[in-house]
Image (tube, rainbow, N blue to C red; front, side, top):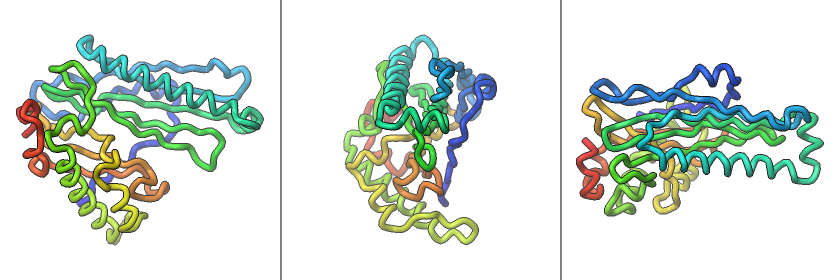
Length: 256
């Protein structure tokens, strides 16, 4: 059955963001408590009424300094791209009529004894019909002290992606025929959006259990990748047994 996680694209106020901590999907065991979020609200151009920025960042442990640095660089790139958009012809005039907004909610989504996984749930409104969603993730290896991508977990990344694609397609195609809420997509879009070797499985979270191990991966597809914008982001859970044989030897102990 399709597990569709609808990631919020609603602009949070600074007060709400300050009260909201990162969501830790680890259940039971001796797992660390959820990270608290801190808020850095940039209103540098507020006097001009052109834009607002609302940034919620996770409170990470000292040993995750490389992850913190990666997130800071990511935020800087997002802010620069957003500010550069104001230099387009006529952009400032449009922003004065309807202020632009950059919202980035970055929080710890899951932890195990080997990994910290951070999710980015945000949007950028730059005068278009609707905000552009920003969906990303970062996974930090606590043993090697570096941020790793999905392909770095596997000795045979291509075979692993084929396994991801098979399960994602099965769940998404099933959702097309959901009698209560059919997925706003079609088989061609689903096939294209889950094709292996196209960086389609870049954004993911960890399914965890009370043993502090990874029991599967949740792949998150931004709007337009496998379904319409109106359908929102889509996500599918793939259990470890679907890809465990393709893991690198050094990571097999981190999965169940």
